[in-house]
Length: 80
View (cartoon, rainbow, N blue to C red):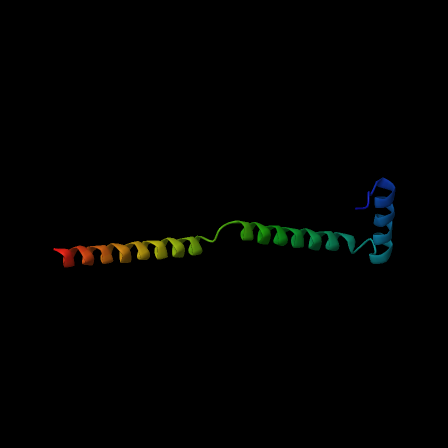
């Protein structure tokens, strides 16, 4: 990865100002900030577990347990 120091960053900043103009810089910075905020929130959202999926998983597990207990109860009824 390139090691950027102050001289390189200064040259890049000057090139950006020359290419896009001084008046458009605040709008570009604002747009960049918004994009970064949206990207960060999307990444955070992907990292956090989905509560609906967790609830569905717990419900499926509970349904499987109920089915197992019903089968066990029916088996005991037939034994008696």
